[in-house]
Amino acid sequence: ADLWIVDMYMSPEEARRHGFWRAQEARKQGWDEAILFNTSSTALYPQGFAVDAVHYLVKTVRYEELKEAMRRVQERALPEDPIYALPLGKETIHIGQRNIMYVEVYGHKTLLHTPSHTHRVMLSLNRVGEILRGAPFLQCFRSYIVNMDHIKSVDEAHFVLANDVCIPIAVRN
Image (cartoon, rainbow, N blue to C red; front, side, top):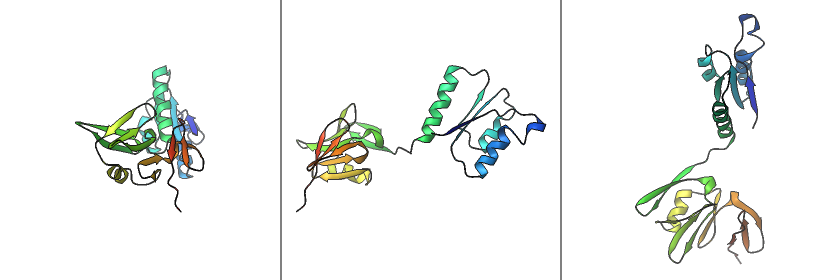
């Protein structure tokens, strides 16, 4: 992700060469990447919102503050990750699209697979498919829905996922 770290503090004679003015000009020209202000004063803090800055650090910066600023930069760089609510019996799981590797029906049970867990979902595969609604999800076989973002390779009859699980592909004549 592109990041511009700007010292917002400026004297009136520097106003056309530094800080907030430059950030404003960049936004006017369509620059949409992350701006992080690092300055010794909180006087211009409200102006940071006017240019959609991801964070405003006041010198001397502590590690935890910098860590939070970098988390916000990373969050801005990532495409939106839709969250799905799926029932697991008496509980509901709220799971991001990126975490869903595939869904399968196995022995009359609908199983949702993430990189670290398998959850039994209390819905039919068809209903889960309706909730996930299309790309990047594909029902590639009667009992499988795969997140195409996790496909590592394809052979004649399978999608091979990043965790080396093979998902069958329906072959049409």
